[in-house]
Image: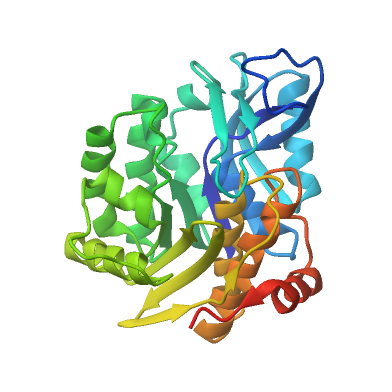
Length: 329
């Protein structure tokens, strides 16, 4: 079985027991691990796929636990071990109408200092079918920025599909820095993940139309994306007020899911679940209508439990789709 590789940083996540942590101190925290690429890989690893996470961990208990965490989700770890530190982040979960609040503590982490060499890249990407990367990684350091393009060069030379989530984080770099990076990378991308707010913000685009339908803004954004680069497959999560959905563009056709409206517990990692579930559908050669339906249901159900990784099985996701989705038309 061909493997799926993810390159990125896994961090320790701390979530305060009370949502008002920034104004009233909390003595209790929930802890887990999370990171965009690792979250997506975990979705596939839990389904028996050959998944490998390329990263760097410190030589201490937190680094050891990070490896065990990924292994528990079926993901093999290919990690450099050093004497630096593990990145951490404080996550205050969002709700339907309130985005999650993320506070990073990741400067000078093991991952940010880990320089890839050709020998390691060749070994890691051997027999690889997809490599998952995101826009969170390049602003972490010049080393990470350069590593991304080393991986892309190897992937393109070996017919490996590049899966890329723009994942803009304003706390890591400016919009203009992100835009310049994306202009460089998008021409290499085979499967793009984004949403209207992220793409239009990074590229400073505003719709000239008055858009009222649930998918209208996303379809308009899709035109903007294609005007920047003709990417073969574009996958988008959609939020419109208190409803969510998903769409996939491939071979000049748009496939849309039904929409969901439900109680949110934790939004962190939900988009990564959409990525993992979409690739799962591709690997199983499902019809695109089934891929977008399943991926969006996975995205939606991820909001109902704490933690970055989607631990629901296929039957639970399908039952959620049947019981919670409504036709967008």
